[in-house]
Picture 1 (spheres, helix red, strand yellow):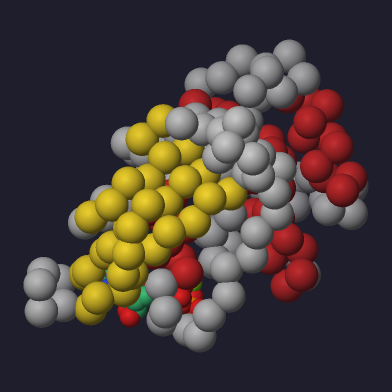
Picture 2 (picture 1 turned 180 degrees about the horizontal axis):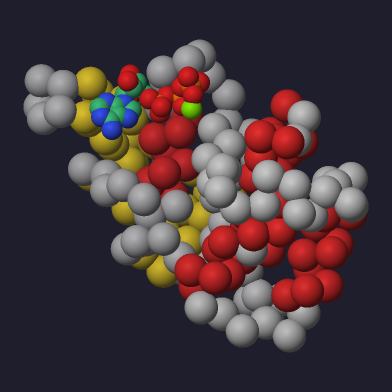
Length: 160
Ligand SMILES: Nc1ncnc2c1ncn2[C@@H]1O[C@H](COP(=O)(O)OP(=O)(O)OP(=O)(O)O)[C@@H](O)[C@H]1O
Ligand SMILES: [Mg+2]
């Protein structure tokens, strides 16, 4: 990335401790710059703070020290144009496949003229065509675990 490029995600000396000063010190002055469309994996042993870092970037939890910005804006809550795939499926058992996929757009109260096509594309990508009306308990384990990965794409209008 050159100086002329703006980092899509920028972390400057980000620290986080859970449970006060004597608590669990999870992140210690983490620095990182991620460019637009750069694909980055965060690796480390269980409990080292990967999810904590992603939750901070996603504006879901506060950090203690340092700066976190997404597309030049200091993170202050979840940005509309960011989607998060959680570690666990978090599917709503009373909603079928289509209704689980469109939950985000419903919450955002967005109107997207391409929403039906986006939903069809996502269902096809997940190889769930024909299962649009199925409920989570009727899906195989793999279907159940891949479904959440498409949820953000259905929630973010094409205009974003
Ligand atoms: N809300 C919280 N309150 C207190 N401690 C927390 C909280 N969230 C996470 N922790 C602690 O912070 C540490 C890092 O947790 P985190 O979930 O970020 O780890 P991880 O690297 O994602 O692990 P895994 O690979 O198992 O998913 C762990 O010790 C965890 O117990
Ligand atoms: Mg984790």
